[in-house]
Length: 71
Image (cartoon, rainbow, N blue to C red):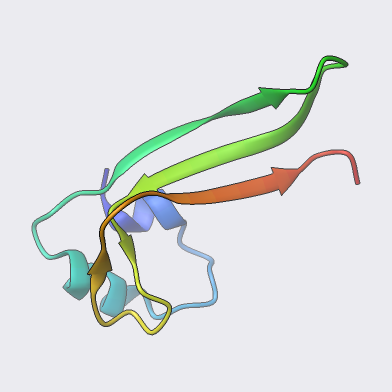
């Protein structure tokens, strides 16, 4: 997936830096709900590889983003 699609276009980051960091490489992304027994309470997004906080290098491993749907 293109990095803009993986992280969204409205984030608090410079999209050109993210695009330049990934270059021709694409991010592997998985999305889905997490069922806690009483229905979906969280939405999970996993992204690999993921950028460092300063958008200077790609980190190995997987970034987990969790959206709490109960609030």
